[in-house]
Length: 90
Image (cartoon, rainbow, N blue to C red; front, side, top):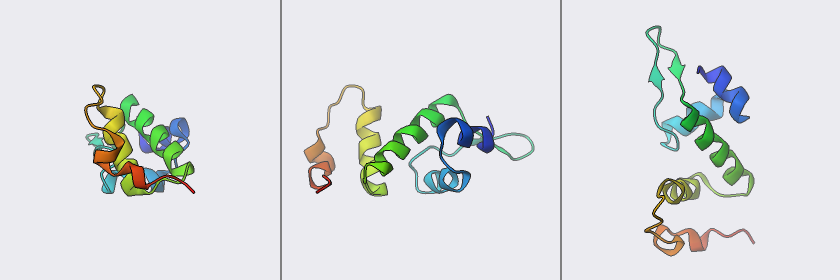
């Protein structure tokens, strides 16, 4: 789906989607033959996760660590190893 549809489905503004892609929170979107971004459903799920984490007050850096834990289904790493113990909201 294009960036407009991804924005509507995830609730994340287009500019934020581009930013999250540039800082590595979501993978670089594939491109159509005409050069438009094409996002997969997994990108939408990740964008929703990022949006919720940002709403909770996590920094972009900490969201990246949270994404690492979220994608690691075996949960072989703990929060302490990723530095998340220091990112609690006061």
